[in-house]
Image 1 (cartoon, helix red, strand yellow):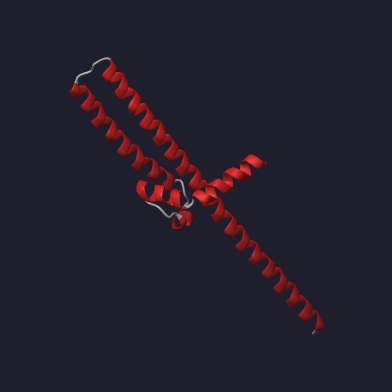
Image 2: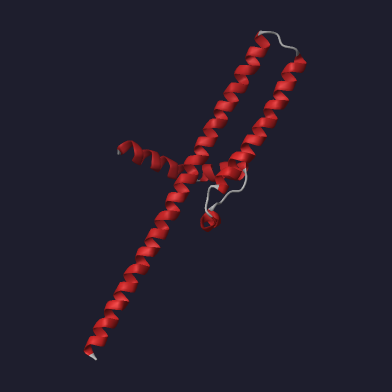
Amino acid sequence: MEWFLYLTLYAFGYLTCKTFYFLNASRTSINMLKGAQLTCLLMLARSMEHFSYSRALRLHHMKMVESSEQNIQAFTYRFEGELIHYKKKSIEELIDAHPQVFRQFIEFDNWGAGMKYLEENKDLLELIHLRSTND
């Protein structure tokens, strides 16, 4: 009888350890996923800054060479279309990069929601940046 209790206690301890290890690993995975999402959204936001800069530079150049107003409007229209497509496609690709198991942890589904999520978690991004500069 005594050996049975020892064996039961060992099995209970083993299963408890495995359960807590699994829960800890799951929490770590979710935190890493959120950090990766935020980093990707930050890179996309920075790319939009570069898009905006290139648009302004191109418009400035077109005005310097005295392009027609029709050419400037055509460029602006085409640029806005490409910008909308880029925003939509980049968020779709980010979401598609997640395995099905982790899709429930994505808190955005379009560009506006993604930028709002990025703004809400700015403190976490600063913490990640601070840790990376200290290492």
